[in-house]
Amino acid sequence: MTTFISPFTDFGFKRIFGQEDSKIILIGFLNALFEGEFVVMDLEYRDKEQLPDRPSERGVIFDVYRTLDTGEQFILEMQNKYQKHFEDRALYYASRGIARQSKKGNWDYNFNAIFGIYLMNFTHTALPSHFRNDYGICRLNKDEDAETAIKQVLTHKLRMVFLQLPLFTKKADECITDLDKWTYILMNMDKLDDIPWRDEKEAFEAIASIGSYEALSEEDRNRYDDAQRNYWDSIAVYEGAIEKGRNDEKVCIAKSMKNDGLNEKLIAQYTGLTLEEIDKL
Image: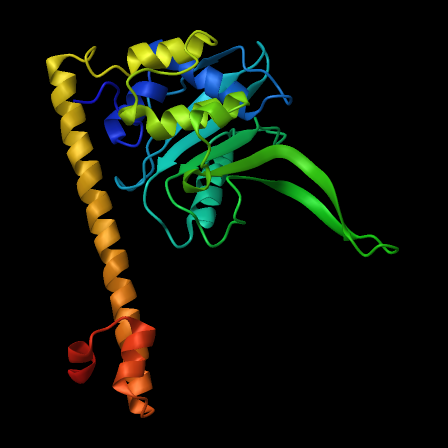
């Protein structure tokens, strides 16, 4: 039996990040993510949760207030399955966060900053092969002497941070920064017997308490178990579709090679198909 719930499930994600009594966890994560830039002292949820239009696209939108008179909106999302235009969808939801702030009457277009944070349980071809990729709106100019790009930020009102979790491969003893530790915990939470570093941060202690499977009510355990099964099923279907796509690609290549008169043993060597499969093409 698991000791802690998985944040990759719909139930687990909402319980860890989407409750008023767990906001210390979200604050700790945000401060680790933006360490050296700003500090989130407190936050309040604009709504209990706001999900994207499609049930398969899970996300939660928060209003975060750093001072009494300024506020930033954070879109926090855990996405488990590859989407072809994920970067465009991320921009779309960030843009909606801006549009929702419009006001009737005489409005000067001064809106709160939108930070999109995307925890991705996959890697994406549109992103460089780095664990973390940050994007904003900036001016790109060519230096006339060096012919290198000069970046000048136009506005800090839009920021998107993509975390490609499969590219994070550190072990516990290799985690140095707070973001390292947060990422390790989230990625391994349902496999851990105890939450590491819980004596270092109050937020780590909180995630151990709130994320405890034993601490769930019977009703919540049933909800989590259902969510866990749905997660496993969706991953199995997703991986099956990928495998089918790979096999279909092999068949197409084998057909082309066979039509070009290549030897079937050579086709088998390069495609991984059996001679029997190639003979049936």
